[in-house]
Image (cartoon, rainbow, N blue to C red; front, side, top):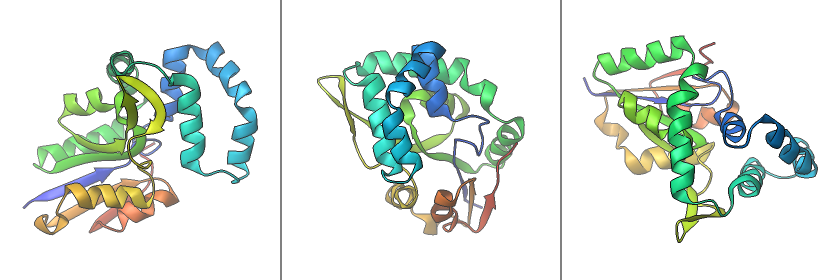
Length: 196
């Protein structure tokens, strides 16, 4: 029986936000906190819901990485994915992912996080992924997204673009936030939870 399982990443299968952890990994804790202090006016506007999630995220990414080469970011991302990411993945989440794989199910990580810092982990486990993508020009990060932030209804759009769900006899979805409800509405079985 052909089946597919979609998993959100941050706070569903990880104990920490991978975006924040990657920022610390590439800049160190002190520089991370200094940069966030400089960004505090924008973060206050985000917390007050004056600016949207995608804009706040892009502002932070641009501040930290604009002008960095794709090669540099990917090398750091691969190191993070293999050295740091496994330590923040819940054991119960990994067990559930492995259960799906053992049943022969296709497993897809669908996340607003950027593929650079988790794709090596997915590839090592045999997982597919849909995510936010950075835009590059002449090999350098432009400070923009290649496509809209993979969040909320955008997750549904990406899933439908890549997978014909009518071909699957059963669809599973796992998420932890109201924004994941859109993705979870596609599933025959959905789990609104964290694996903590």
